[in-house]
Amino acid sequence: MWQKATILIASLLFPASLALAQDGEIQTQQVSDNFHVLYGPGGNIGVYTGDDGIIVVDNKFAPLSGQINAAIDQISGDDIKFVINTHWHGDHTGGNENFAADGAVIVAHEYVYRRMSMEVFLPLYNSRTMPSPTGALPTVTFADDISFHSGNETITAIHVPNAHTDTDSIVHFEQANIIQLGDLLWTAGYPRIDVQNGGGSIDGVIDAIELALELADNDTQFISGHGPIPPQGKQVVQNYALMLRTVRNRVASMIEQGMSEMQIINARPTEEFDAVWEGENPYIDADMFTRIVYISLI
Image (cartoon, rainbow, N blue to C red; front, top):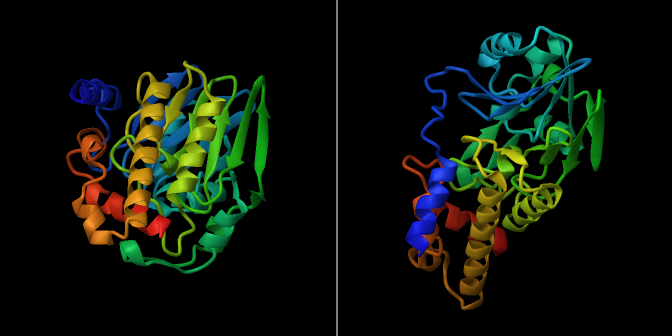
């Protein structure tokens, strides 16, 4: 029975009709009349074309800004008014300085400003990020949420604490019925969570996904940080939440039994989910995801 479910979910997550951009190419997918997604190296970009300008969610890496602008120009000739960052990572904020120089206002949670202003070392990933230039920092920040009104559309960015990082926001396009989740949702593999000095936690990711599901109906489209838009999105996100909760609870139970990190990894608490969520060339494989959950819970 689970094998059949795995095949179904995998077909929803990775539709053959969607060829994602490779080798630096930016590709565009139209999601609704006034919403497009740009794929390519780095995090997915949401592009909303409103009556009074364009709102962009995330912006990949700085060297791609020219290609990104060219792709947006093919959608609309209007100016980019706002750029919303879903979180602070450079594959989502790398173009901030370029877009700000062109006149866009950069908007993000206040912790995005803080993280981008400092040196951050994440020992689990052996990753060190240096402070960003002043011109790349958000110029408008918020504590809990912020809303934008464009015609009949309301776009709300909602902070979710201690999830993928401590800087994450859900971006909800209410009339378009689209929720952009940044790296709270990965449809290309197990999620990265910035535990150990990054402010992230498995419990926070679960809470964030449950909030997104509360905002959604059966027709809501979900934009992930990496990977394609899944058809029947709510079903896929519900299965993602189930995977997160199941693995989290299994690892917690093993910790209570006194098992070590390596013993828990060897017990393979993700095993029945690997066919769907590990992918062919995973950035985060099953063992690393188990380790992330373990570190988050100890």
